[in-house]
Amino acid sequence: GESVGLHLPTLSVQEGDNSIINCAYSNSASDYFIWYKQESGKGPQFIIDIRSNMDKRQGQRVTVLLNKTVKHLSLQIAATQPGDSAVYFCAENQAGTALIFGKGTTLSVSS
Amino acid sequence: DTGVSQNPRHKITKRGQNVTFRCDPISEHNRLYWYRQTLGQGPEFLTYFQNEAQLEKSRLLSDRFSAERPKGSFSTLEIQRTEQGDSAMYLCASSSETGGSFFGPGTRLTVL
Image 1 (cartoon, rainbow over the protein chains, first blue to last red):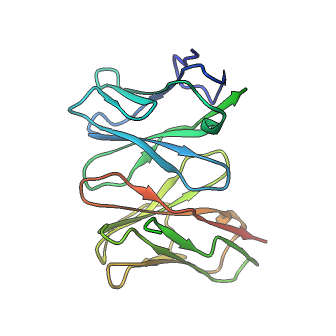
Image 2: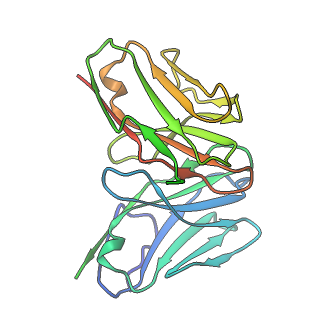
């Protein structure tokens, strides 16, 4: 599968590959993190979240990893499909505050 | 549909006009947020309500912008004397006190 060591604005993969999208967050006090998927002309769609007391959480075909030591978040998508093509954003916050969004990564999946 | 809804979906206006957008959150959510998103960027926070109380406003929210949530349910965002720089997607999101934020489809504003 393809992976991104540091944040890159685009990621291109083949259908069926695993994708890894990385995000560096800014606030060491943040205790809640979310990955969103945004398709063109639509609002961000909630994918998966993780709290700071965890380092891994799995959903359907997606896994989020949190490394608080280096303030790094990643989203792994298994068996990437053309319908996964979108812009992916990570977001962070502390309880009761608004989300702060990272820079998006555009995922392109070719069949 | 039990998701967040926003109206209108698109708005084209002339510079100097006032516009108002509406957001209907998920019914059991007491928190409501407004964000603005420009092309190629992530959403930027504008303001936040818990029930009817406006608890936080970004410095991005100039005095031409005002938001209300009078009964703790739907919210409106008004922009007075619109400028071309106000052209953006305006997103509304809602959440419970402990859960993630769910976004609406947005209102695309174009100021001519």
